[in-house]
Image (tube, rainbow, N blue to C red):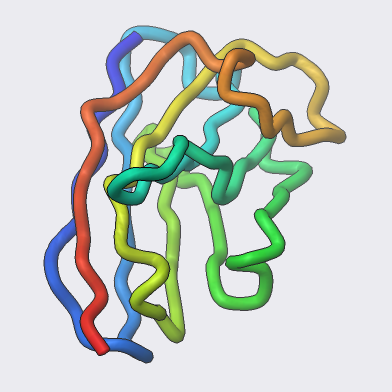
Length: 126
């Protein structure tokens, strides 16, 4: 399974940005996909996730109400729409996937994901 994240860059605070994660190598509907991020000097943390059929999504408290995750099954892509960006959102963002069959939950633990993209970085300046 290959994941490729793209869409990073540099934006001002309160701007919007969309990250995308292209998935290949396995039937897309078999994979739950999540976004994690790692800021400089900090541990990688869960940001948002979506179940394999899209029936459930979940968010970290720090992004709830600002970020929206969605999946485009026609293009094997998961998007992360980010609104009202803050400087503390600055990080390298990674998409990750695994065959989590349950469609009614989102798994937030890093070790539950075995497929990882290369990360895309963006900076939010105040």
